[in-house]
Length: 81
Image (cartoon, rainbow, N blue to C red):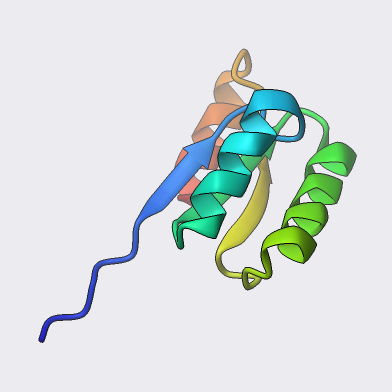
């Protein structure tokens, strides 16, 4: 039987509100999530909170800083994923 291909999601504005809840739901379903936000401190705090709440591994939920209005930031994220 073939192994299931891992699924990935990139969520912008994910350190609070709807974005954070989307990350929570995706991670709880086994999808590997890249949580992004402009504020690195709040983004990293959100990742740690979600890891505690969902019990997912470090590889399943990661943070990458992103400002969607900055082309260099977008390029950095594209290279990361």
